[in-house]
Length: 494
Image (cartoon, rainbow, N blue to C red; front, side, top):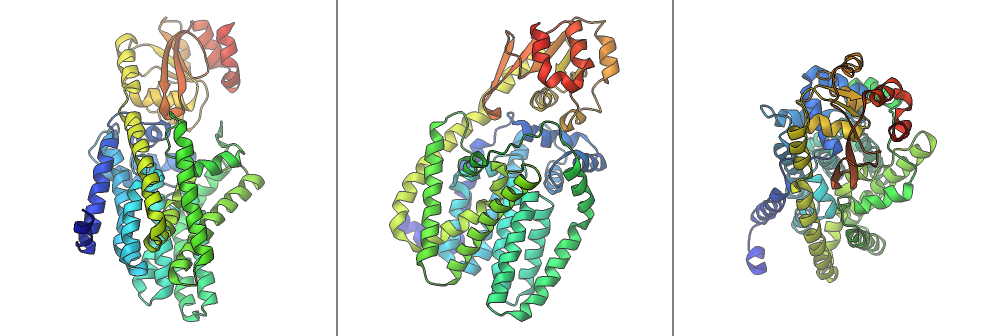
């Protein structure tokens, strides 16, 4: 088999690796289960185009490019088409692999390019990037593309290299703000290389392209300022730097099976160790410069996020660090292409990680917990029932899986509650209806009580409860929204 593979041309090998990678991910697409942020993404498509952009600029914490591209991808599809939306993330992962086929091959040769193509589909973070309906696959593509073309721009005279560097940079800025932090270090590393190599004539395209990128982001600066100044209730980021940093190694490991944590962390930490040893022990060369730049961008983004979290507000989230996945795959490809002694151990550890992640991810996307909940609610919940939801998680579950129920009351307004404003009854109408019906329920994650429990591995094994309450308790919940988040359990238990 290996002999046959080695006898193929470069493009045949690349097509084979990409094809096998796509086949690996097809069973992981799933058509129903979606976690909190995925539901948020899809629910924004209920708006008109202008309404969606206005909502994202006012209430989300990310730029809009991924939402725009995903909506174009889903033109003509219902916003509940989870399978079709997941395929877009897989398409973006395949586009990242194509960076190996073209620019990385020009930069580092055939062997490194083929290793990069293969790693793009089998590394642990890719099982998240290629299946999650969020912007991280696009963000990783943009940062990786910018890093690669920054080297090609510094090494050659092709204007197209600067054009692609600028395009990837602009797209990254409009995809995720962590891309902006990473791109600062990509451009900083490029400026350092040009200065150290005394390539003064290339400083002109450097400043021209950088100016165009900066100018292109100006239209979104006002929205960015609004997002930055907006106090989001229940800000979910804490100051646990150790957990968030370790989470960079663990992310995409299913939270359902904790023994996987050690395997994934050990595997990726070992890979980083190989990369560091390569960087310290190899003589100066282009591959070593690429490794150094990848390490600089990774360390620089982490330090910037730490500093901002200490000075302004916590922003360090492990999944945000997935924008750096390509900055991990690229130097690891260089190491594996040049050092045969570590390949056997790599294949053993990587093969184990792929098997564990594949089957656990398969369970998460195909398990019936949300489908069972939907069927039970549709069977027993009257259409005129009033349902009070008390958190972002419960709001998004009910909005996404039970859209036909109009009588939803929110105890606490936030971005998730605004998603349903076009179809929910207002608070006054809900309060009036309380005297006309006894079908009043609370959907909560905070009330440990007999009732229907929904246990979702997608939200870290959170248990949700569907509890019938009296009109009096409902009025107490809805009349004190500023206190309900911390007090409603006590109200119900009294």
